[in-house]
Image (cartoon, rainbow, N blue to C red; front, side, top):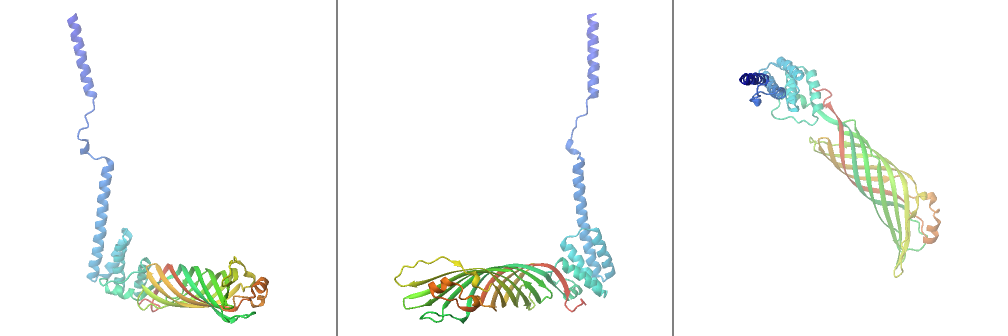
Length: 377
């Protein structure tokens, strides 16, 4: 009985072992030998991209080959197909456009060649024809030029002032009848320019300027009278500028002329007399705006040296401006009582001549393509 029981146990263990073996999954051997879906996708994408690049390059080569064979209509058909079918780089698209324009020109489709040339220059307004470009393409492109419609600029300036004296009011004896003036100014300018022709433009440039003017005159052998003034203005110059290209785009000189409205924001003065051997306490500046002509008009002109680099222009400016009205209001010359009775001084009557130097940078916007002879061909 015991022997029979042992035999039954052995048989049960054998059955269980067989059942366990049947339910075990096969081991995942050589897992790296089979790529998953993502890896297969990357390889497929890489192959597709490579094929696309090869197809574009082959199509461009076919385009050049057709043009060399004189099959200009086939060039136009293939050019349209390439443009619709592929996403081209800038270099590839330029090459396609060059031979398309050349094919139009060779077929005497002048209007189509002109239209394609305008599109070409809108994409790259600074393109310069090269020696290896197709001759018909060069002929078409040489009939056009590009120019910006608008420009914005910012500049900083330094100026020296020279008063043009009308009247020097002398109310006491003095050794020096004609006073000595030293005056400088610093300005900041924002400009807007509209180009209505390649060689002509009109500009408006709001300008803020701060000035310091020092006047001195010898009253005796041992004493000098000083009249120092600080004033600030805002101005709106409007001027026409003419450019001289001389066949070169990088360096372009120009001349300008116009008018500007000026408004005096503030004026302050400080006056004192310095005598040898006497202690001097220089007074602070006091408000002096009310006795000025706050509104003024000036004529202006000058020359500029422009250095162009693609959409940027760097310029240096030498200019002159002449105020039509006097700085001091002649009808109010006796209103500053402390100045008259304490310093025995009446301000001079004079117009200001301003000589200025500016340095600035300009951004050119919205380039347009223009035919040199009002038509491309």
